[in-house]
Image (cartoon, rainbow, N blue to C red; front, side, top):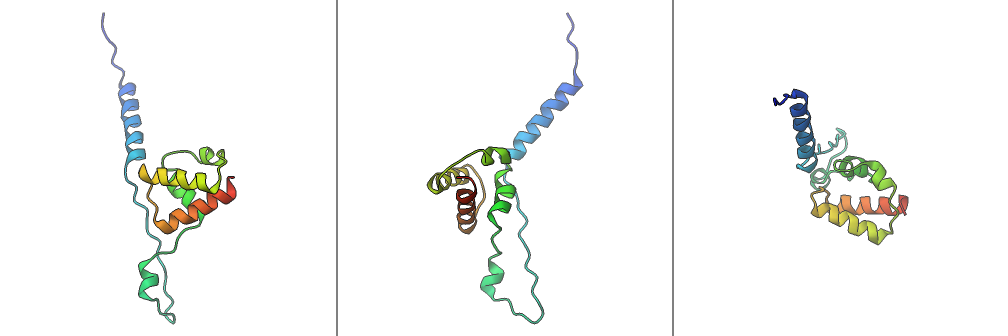
Length: 113
């Protein structure tokens, strides 16, 4: 009995492995740039800390890297439950600063309760 060679199967396996690797890998997010007006001086503390995105943007950019937006939208949790969920996602690799974490939890608690 001879075995058939399926090149499309190999391509499918490579595609799936690539998708899984991308989902589990570290993501680089572009840092926002702040354009300074020639008449306004930017203090070093403002220039050193980029502005925090709003909760909806953080949800779209950071959470949908690993799962769908529908998964978040279908959840109904209290602020404390969202805090625990976001902390768990950070432990699993989600990249959020403390300020971004606070904004995201506040947004999730207000919108999805």
